[in-house]
Length: 329
Image 1 (cartoon, rainbow, N blue to C red):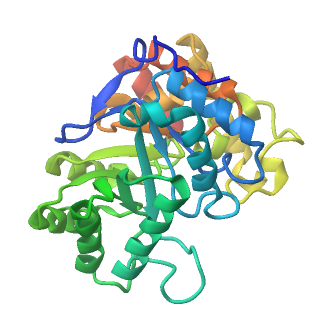
Image 2 (image 1 turned 120 degrees about the vertical axis):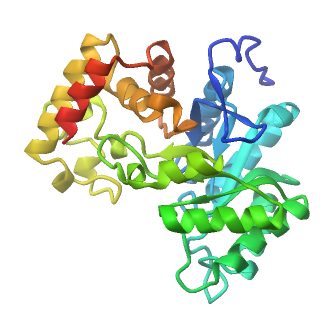
């Protein structure tokens, strides 16, 4: 059956301007990091994308190395795009990245012009696209001159392969330099994608100030701290959980009794607010409107629905913020 998007898809989502650009992003975006590779049933990936778009999530975030194996998330997304979403292409924000190891040899990693442009060409081919909406440099390169990396980003915009560019995982000082270089080239930096959650707050040490000062948007990945900020671990570590599976993204050593006590206290506040912990954790990242969007992952439709519930109560009282801060210290 041909997919028809919900006619009500824009009624409940909040769209937020990305920095000082003309682009708006949904408050919740969907990341295709873990659950869109060849280890996931394609129909499951299809259901996740359809549910997200039907709910107003217009931004799908990928990278060249997403899978597993690397490249497969883009290939599978490309197939679903052709079969279900092609008529909606102009309603979608599709992003990809390059910066981690993608192929063997000296040209398949980091931040050289050779690697970035070759990687984007491969990504476009895998997805069957003429352009992506946002192309990121995925991580800083300690050896390639920053100007070369930024000139490569400028080039892909001028070549029509990307509409906007951004950076990810850049510390504050380096992000400021990258933004200034892009401005001087005439291709402003649209967005920065850092890891940010209640349990990982490094961006508050200067990065958010830099982005606000320079008019650059931000989208937080891993806002649930790899699943720690959910109700999954309130009573310990279930045998069938990610933490018990030996996952490199969350392991049992991270879930100390001290950390679990914090999770339980945060959950109590969420319950008083009439929402799930996951919803409060997402709302907290968006507090103060310094972050444009939160990037969620999902393996089932219900997880998307849980995240969407955040929109019903995403603001905090001063007393709630103070109580949360005391727990997190």
